Amino acid sequence: MDAVEARSWITLDAAKKLLADCGQDFDALKKSAITKEFRPVTLNAKDNIDIKQQLRAFKSHNVIGKLDGSDPKLQDEYVIYTAHWDHLGCNPELQGDQIFNGAIDNASGVASLIQLAAAFTKVNPPTKCSDLFMATTAEEAGLLVAKFYAEHPLYPLEKTLADINIDTVNPWGKTRDIENLSDNNSTLDDLLAATAKRNGRVMTPNSQPEKGGSYRADHSEFSKRGLPALYTAGGKDFIGKPVDFGQQKKDDYTAHHYDRVSDEIDPSWDLSGVVQDIQLLFEIGYQVANGDKFPEWKPGAEFKVKRDCNVQKVVPIDR
Image 1 (tube, rainbow, N blue to C red):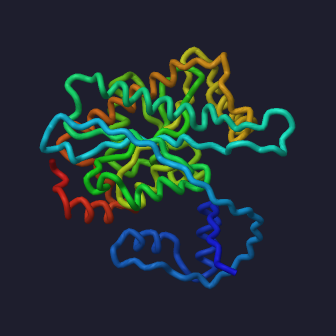
Image 2: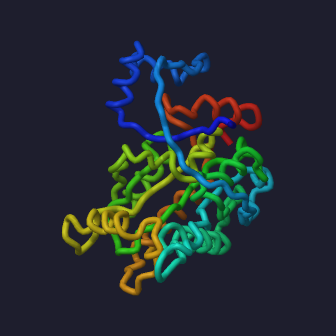
């Protein structure tokens, strides 16, 4: 039987205990893991996992559009926006509605991607470098085609400045905040904070880091190959709403609509919050595309070494 890779999550406390039981120190390993000399450490531990799965083959496609930059010297540098267009298809075993429309996850992201592309065709002055807009597929199957693109890019990742990924939006109205799921690992996070502040808003940190959000969306496949990425979520501090309104909406969506056939368009949605957030991501992409230097990973970020080596082989970080 062929070996099967199993991916899962454990809490930080559980990870520290597991390492300690195997004679290892979490903090020491974490520190050494960001060095070039680090090699994987085999633990004297075993686990039994039972997996029931069905395998099927399918063909699908990414859809990508490009707007050429206005600066001839920078046209071969890129900012990329991504959003996945796939969902779970149909389940004939369900009674009644069998179609997973994926309205929030992630038709909302693809609609935002299309509007961003339209906005960049009208902005004056246009961006100096080129802009890419890619609707990825097979995200729900494990980020498969984002990974494929990152390994076989149409445009070199070492000459791509950043990936701005949109995976679901806020359909419940305007907020005073925007949540950063990128874990403050790159200068893109600083740009998000500054841009939010300029628009009278505040950037808040990932409220549920234990869910591993920064590793569960398409941008993570780009980050693994060194590309700085920005990934946000809608805020929770809704204007004109009770304090707990935002958390209640998110909890209700997760419990009753996430990856279910009920993820459908709701006529009661207030899309002003979507507009607000996407305008913010537009501003960030525009600034990056016209900036003086490539976005960078911060010291200690796990993907910094790979990015620094790849970029410096092709183009200086200062543009």
